[in-house]
Amino acid sequence: MAGCKLVYREAGPPVRLEIAGGRACIGPGCRPLIVAGPCSVEDPDMIRETALFIRRLLVDTLGYSNVVLRGGAWKPRTSPYSFQGHGARALEWLREAGDAAGLPVATEVMDPRDVKLAAEYVDVLWVGARNMQNTPLLRELAKTGKPVLLKRHFGATVEEWLCAAEYLLAGGNEQVALVERGTRGFNEYARFSLDITVVPVVKKLSRLPVLVDVSHPAGRRELVPPLAAAALAAGADGVMVEVHPNPDKALSDAKQQLPFRMFEEMARELLERGLLPR
Image 1 (tube, one colour):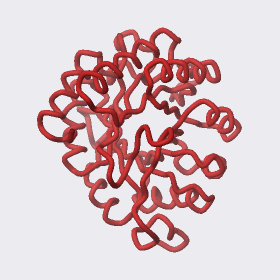
Image 2 (cartoon, rainbow, N blue to C red):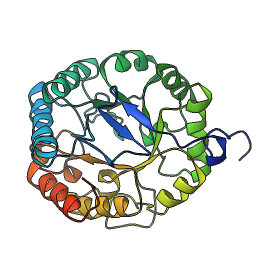
Image 3 (tube, one colour):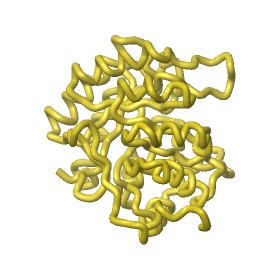
């Protein structure tokens, strides 16, 4: 596509993201990355409880260390009256929880004015679907040099998605991975339609790693484990999964977040099936 050249396979070697000094990674030579945690950082106790659980389960018990703790500090919501996140305070809570568990941390950034602050606290910044083509935000993120996860807008073509990533690379930041999170469609049984096809398509077209957010397309927690298996089987470089100590009382996206028990069952099954190679 004219004007978008750095993202394509011919432009250079495959990109590998180094997170928190190599404590986690995405891309060539890396096991699939698991980005797990609550939709929103609701309070310091819940994010710490979640972080310690993820650490004990994945790293200490299952021996799977390519893990990042996720949590939303700012939350884009359809309604202006819904919970919007705790902002800067949530960044502090997320960082403290990650440090307590020994895990790198990631959060979404929505506003270019918040990029510098967020980069001081977290190891990975992600761009939500609504902001995929927010070019002022992309330009600010490029300046950080930090790993960036770019979600595909639910109405965007593959070319539009790759050209959004081009803004980051053109700004001097090659630490970029793409995240598929489902598209709009004629789907009455899930929140979005997970376009699993784009995983092999984008991996053939682009030199950027591809992850799959399996919680948003599901919209229902019982659909999350099979979608995670499908994403990894299709060759995804990792999955994003929402996990909460008490999902039914979550302040955002309650129905799609996994309780600890379900997340453990899913992780064990993915390992047993060889979809998360040891």
